[in-house]
Length: 462
Image 1 (cartoon, rainbow, N blue to C red):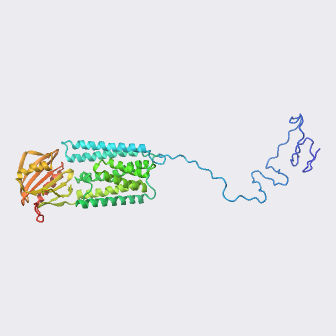
Image 2: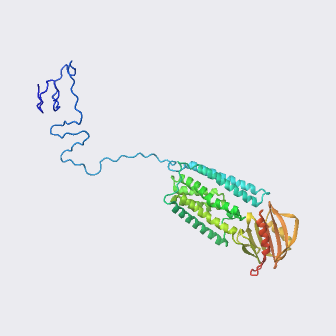
Image 3: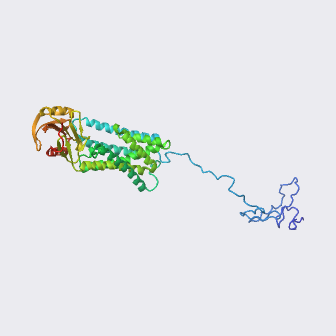
């Protein structure tokens, strides 16, 4: 019986390891019967459960799950690991996922919106050529068409704002951004209004806003103010800055600002104001890039708000006194000068006022050179081409302060009006009036004639 060289335990001759310490014995030489189980031979016992206690002679047993001991004098290498940290996978940039419309899609939305605006303008133009429709009806139709346009375009624009297409409202406090935008828009609009009014010599807000509010009733004032200060900023800023500029911004920001500003100018369909609206669009685009959609909307509100307040002052404010030649007269609120008073090469002084629903009052004063009865027809053709005199002819009327005058009624399309010609101090005065279909304008003109009187401080026309 061989003995175990490690613990000395006696083992059978066929044993391959020590039954006491489990030291493997030197394998026996291979024979023809190696690997063949002999009849009656018992299989080797399984290893005991638990952690393995065997280790090389002189080593430290290592328990399962425990960290093996390091060699004497071992220390971890200094500095960071030699290998780089694992890289995180970054998906490719997706404009839609980042909250932007694809540029082609945004351009299509803008083109459709501008096309709808052109259709509205053509409809308004067609109505204006109908001589059976007076100015009052045209203004009401203009307001209705504008409301419909904003409703359709607003629905189209909002349909593009989905969970994948997020509007960039800006970072930081919304109140701070709104205050900054409002201050910029109000300041710029106030400076422009001051410059234009100083040049004109009177308060001169946007004439279209004044015309739409000109009747002075609450319905017109509220609707026009809401269109100018609520609908326009929300819809136009979302369309031209939130969608169009944002979709083009990943190509070139400067180009995106200019393109969106030019589309904004074309949208307003005013060829004479293309530069004005383009510059305004550039300013709003820069504000959007710096502060987001909240700031650009607020700036738009401030800009239009100044013009709306100025229009309300013109429409609902006190009346004014005007001097023409050697005469002075007063008009009620809602009337404003179309252009500063001028004198032509023949020495005639001219003043034209616009009032409710596009009504107009004009006075021409010139040195008397002919009989008053012949002046009406000549001045009617000169000042109001297309006016058709009333077949009833002329008649004499008595004005409260200046005496007799010759009156002629006429029609200008669906609008009615009259000419008055009188002489005073050696000068001819021709007064024309077009009512625009407004009952308020008719009353204002009658009151104006009652206030007509010589201006002692004014020099006569020479």
